[in-house]
Image 1 (cartoon, helix red, strand yellow):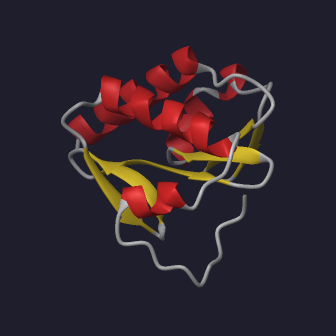
Image 2 (tube, helix red, strand yellow):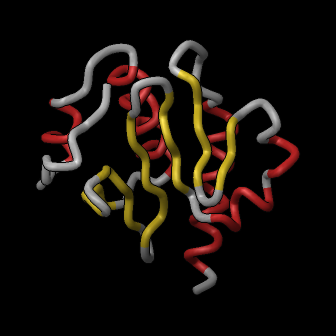
Image 3 (cartoon, one colour):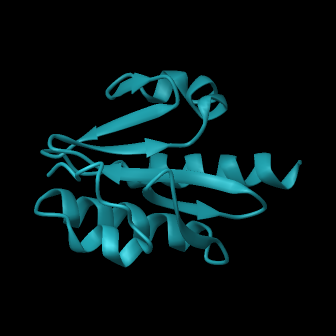
Length: 121
């Protein structure tokens, strides 16, 4: 699944409506995990991908043809460096392959970390 850069999404639901499996199911799991950790966070489209705002931007996430991308800011990638060795990490991006279960515990810790960062602002 590759979303055309020409598509300008107005809502998270519109973004999800363009997804195919298995990316759609994994992205729904990621979304549900973030909502569970940060139930008061607002869902938005930012940079044309889904994101959550809570005391500022919390995390962004997106589906691609062979991975799910989580964009939690570089501070998270530095803080969780030893927990991320099984995943592809690049500047500001954490990639989860489509053929493996999402690391829900790790994602939960990352979102809590970001909430703590945003609370300190």
